[in-house]
Image (cartoon, rainbow, N blue to C red; front, side, top):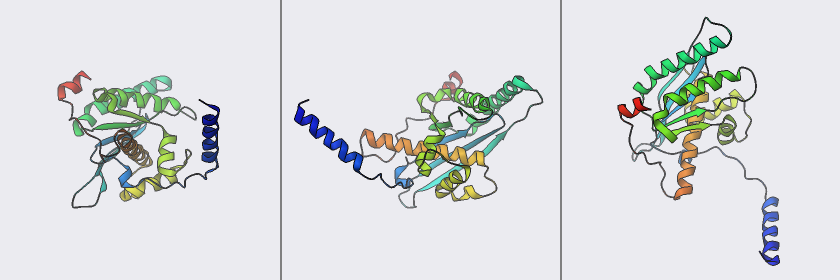
Amino acid sequence: MTDQALSQSVRRRLAEARKPPKEWSPPTLADLAGNVEVLAFDPSLLHTGVVSLCLVRGEIALDAIMVHFNGTINLSSELAGFKRSWDLAHKLREHLGKHVPVMMSPHYVAIETPAVSGMRTESSLLAGCQVWSVFSYLGDRRRLIQANHVSAVLCGNPGHDKKEIAAAVARYIPDSTGRHWSEHQRDAAATGLTLLHDLQQEMRRRDGKHPAVPFQGHPSEQERQDG
């Protein structure tokens, strides 16, 4: 690089640095991938939030987030210590293997990543591992989503509290403010919405044209068993 080119490059970077930061605004439905079924999880050994959602794009009706299922897997164990954690992890794996894949055939699975600090970090680590393993047949259509990324996308800052996440989810899913929704389900929904945002950004970076992510078809029952 010549001295003149280097000088121009430095001036451009200085000009960019002087620009005021862009004002954050929440993603619109146009910023989310459409017609993609996402099964989202907020993993925990005691209370795993599960939400199946999709942004339905219609030619006649308005675009809307459709929730096909929301629930919480509540578990308990009479054991103590590490055996209790192992027992709960086994029960979660058993529940997921029997019920969730039978009820749903997601295009993608979104899993909130385990906590790395705070209390009982082993809970989200062990629970997340069970979810990840059960959906191994999806391959790279299993996506790990960090909580601070969810917060940055939906709330405008990497740090958040439960009230902020609840308000963010309610923008897209008004019913989530009702009593039949728990904080675990709202966290799962936030993870799923963030994945729809990420998928749309990936598509835009690829070709800048298509509003939805192509899907190649559901795996066969044999592929699920092999996975």
